[in-house]
Image 1 (tube, rainbow, N blue to C red):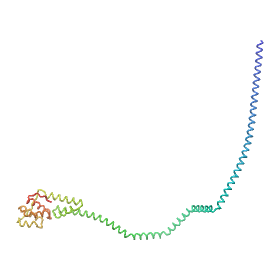
Image 2 (image 1 turned 180 degrees about the vertical axis):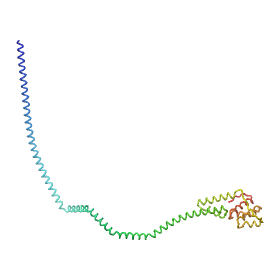
Image 3 (image 1 turned 180 degrees about the horizontal axis):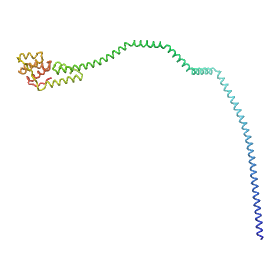
Image 4 (image 1 turned 90 degrees about the vertical axis):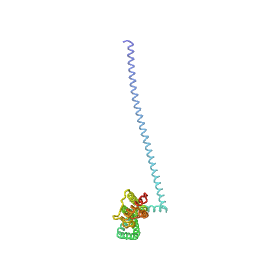
Length: 306
């Protein structure tokens, strides 16, 4: 073995020994560090525990002291309030207030009881007096009705009179219409008097139905009397002119018509004034019709009947 190899071997041995020594020293120091740190933490934990125990003990003493002081102050305040209330209750004002409150509470508490009691008593009294009350009501009602009887009768009479007046008014209107209808029938059947009455009623009435009846009757008779065909009436036995003049006023309307037609036929113009009177006032339409026709023939004038 050469010198270099020997030196290298020795160097390696020394290096390995140094490394081993360093590793053992490191392990030892790490163990010492951990032991020291644990001891320190233990000492710290014990110290902190002792500190908090001392502080807690002091806090408990302080809290007990505060609680004691507070209880003492509350007791003193309560005693002061009781003394103040007792002093106030000794005054007249407080006694009056207490009395008023007591009365209000009593009334409030007894109001329902009093109401029910009074209601029960009233109901019992009304029930007991029921027959008498009923009889009194009946008597008073009869009395009131008896006192109001004249007023009621007067009101009934007034209403009856009003109703009767309305009914009579309607009846009167219908009576006027019926009268006008009857006059129209008679006029169409030849009654001059009925025709004159119908015309007079038509001129004065306010009833539109009556005016319609009068106008329609007049129009019908006007058409009949102004038609072109006229049938003369003659006597079966020939009459003298003097007889004919007398028959113009005969009670029989057909005789008057025949007399007028006969005198007109012979051209006797002396009867014109009488024809005018007959045309306007003869009681029968046939005679008026004959007089109108005679006037047109004798005067030569076109005259419209009616």
